[in-house]
Structure formats: structure tokens, C-alpha cells
Length: 126
Image 1 (cartoon, rainbow, N blue to C red):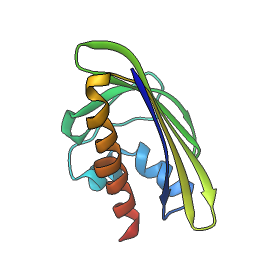
Image 2: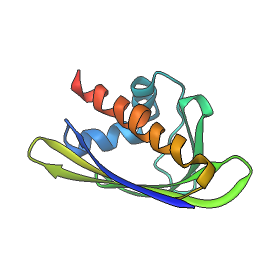
Image 3: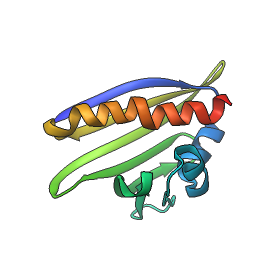
């Protein structure tokens, strides 16, 4: 198992970033694919038309999202924590993804960088 941590700069205030990451309509607009999301702890979520699925664990409005990501039939506690910090030109987004199965690590890191965060950045950079 591996962990991944990285900071990203998003050109929007934390309240806007949080709203985008927790609203299924905004997520669908951001990704271009079906999304299911709720801010209710214990609820299931689905992104990229089911390519990413898991359970929502914790929310702190405008500052923190914690999710359990599922990896097929592997029963691992893979936890994603997103923290939003205001900075002078938008938001510093702190991403931490723990317990990524070794076989999935490269694909997950590429997905975070090339898909998830790239889509989020482009959503606000237009």
C-alpha cells in the first residue's frame, strides 16, 4: 500500500471549490460525466459515471472532505482527505490519499493529476 499527498492551486475561493466538489450537478459539469454526491456522512458517491466510487465519511463545510474510496473486490481502507486553505489568489487544495493498492498507485496518481484536478482547475479557469 502506498500514500499520495500533493498540493494544488485552484483559482477560486474555498467556498466555491467546496460547493463544486460536493454538488452532483457541479461535479457532472466539471467532469462531463454522471456523478452522484451527498454531504451526508455514510452516503455513497460515484464519479465519472461509476469509475470512482466510495463512501462519504466526513465534511467540514468549505474546508474539508473525507471519503473512503473502493478498489473493486479489494477490502482496503483507502481514505481520501481534501483540505481547502484560502490563499492570496484562490485556494490551496491539500490532497492526501492513503492506502492505495500498489497495483493501482500509478493509475490513481495519474487520475488525480490529469483528470480530477485538471478538470477542477479548468472548471474555474474559464
